[in-house]
Image (tube, rainbow, N blue to C red; front, top):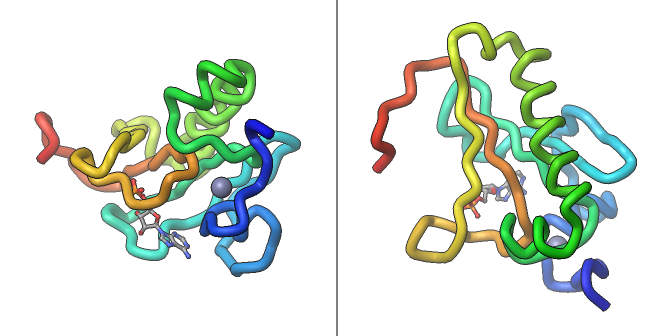
Length: 119
Ligand code: AMP
Ligand code: ZN
């Protein structure tokens, strides 16, 4: 069924506690943890508990949960005090854009200057 945990999904295993993570915040619908290979001084991943392969398919099926992911991302940026300077929320979608884990996730990056356009 759509949104059900996938046995071969790394992030479903993190949500289930099968694979450990440095948890930043949990809500009823979302789970946030530090990226294992940080690309900025503050690099947190915010994921929905439900499994959808990318942000677009999550938003199409569960718009309220997609909004929760965005709200939590902004809340974490404020909690981690990177919001005054500026931060970035990124949803890599597809292998050509650098997506490697096919469970929707927001990267929240901050704590340094972020170039535009991105590479
Ligand atoms: P993406 O390349 O956009 O699919 O992002 C996947 C992210 O997951 C990468 O930034 C990885 O560093 C991160 N990642 C992979 N495995 C883990 C893990 N076990 N714990 C935390 N972050 C991870
Ligand atoms: Zn998953």
